Image (tube, rainbow, N blue to C red; front, side, top):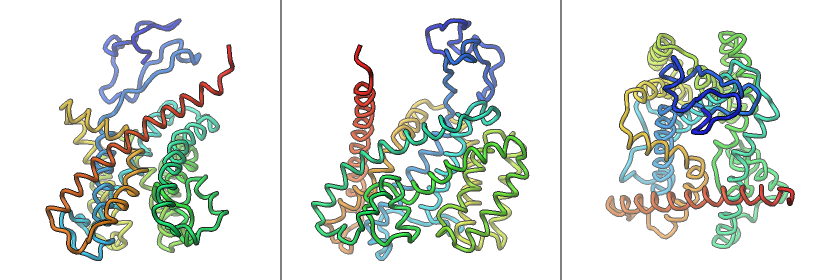
Length: 380
């Protein structure tokens, strides 16, 4: 909406109740006359279920990386949290799948006409780059020197040209995919490289959903599943394309379609299709996504809504900082001798450290961006 002030050509458009017949889920909004001229940018209604799902995914990632660190990457028994969900779903894979789905849904929801209007490709890719790279580079510039100094020789085997992978945000992905054995990776995860590839595909997937949704699904499944089963992508990208597409399509699905997909995923979990762990995770995560979205529509408790919105706001900063922090925290512990109490205390310290580092990174990123804008502005 236009906010508390009026712009030229606008009728009063705040609060929203002055507009007639706005659907409760907010997908279809009326436009003020000035908006069509680009004079009155309309901010879409925030969807709580997206915040809720992103918060759940974030908690899963925080827990699994803590588990991995305090168990010596699962060589020791876990003393605090489990790492496996029903159907033998790995908690980290579940959290990542939810992130892929919520990313697809959020992009589709905020795109022009929610995918029904043409997309300016240059503007889209520019916005994605601005959303991803500045904070990633800033986090790397902070944490790389710390690791370089505190762990001499850690990067001795890294080839200098592999710095290009860091510039592109693909350093962790490159290691996970086996492109390199060692580079200058420090912050972020393989997930960042995977989501960057999905961002490249988004305009094409969006166009397909708009023109031929069923054909788009058929092509995506026919292309991604063989690549995944053959392992040509190191099982890092292909299986997540249908997840990303599901999030995009979910924005437009009505209740019968959502229930149908939920039932289909539940049935497939008990078939040989779920023998592959990643496929089983995709099915399980799709069902969980639909259920969490439905649950989000039933939750009206403001403190919980605010908490999920806060976690969602800082989720990217948390994603960049949490892993390097927990690895640093466990350095001085005898993991085999740690008690359950000490593990719980370390988890609390870990959460506080991640919260502080993420908030600081978020604010530093905002300051750097605003300073860059001021420096680039022409003097009056």
